[in-house]
Length: 182
Ligand code: IMP
Image (cartoon, rainbow, N blue to C red; front, side, top):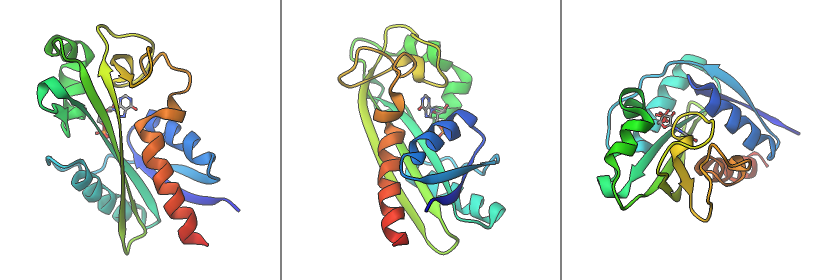
């Protein structure tokens, strides 16, 4: 038996990846295209939690949202919770100008689920580093993020969806969700 859940986002790339990942767990995602209220906060999980409340209010159906952040060690975790704004303003080239010799970073994904009664949060991160120049044809920070133990950026890798920060957080969500249904 497969389960249907809504995925609220304005980002179709994110939805497409999430949908592929969750199909491995027989969870069927439907795209709920929406510009959700996004608070500014230092905590990605608090942002995701607020977003999922707004998403449930709009959809009135069980729904998940995802919030991500790229944390660069030499910049004390910047852009972190501000990753979306920074991508829109200075973009990958701006990030590359800021990063110096220590290029280590992590990509964090938080999944928030609401059924209107409770909110559940699932968080994961993947370590990696910032490339010296954009490589590959990908969305967002994909061309400049090289996950740990790889030589290629997310944009160059063919198996991003099997190793990404998103894969890890959605796997945690799926195992909780499927066990809860039984
Ligand atoms: P958001 O606020 O959760 O949408 O994401 C923060 C920023 O990270 C946005 O600019 C996204 O495009 C970017 N982002 C999120 N996930 C990924 C990814 O898997 N690859 C590349 N960029 C991403």
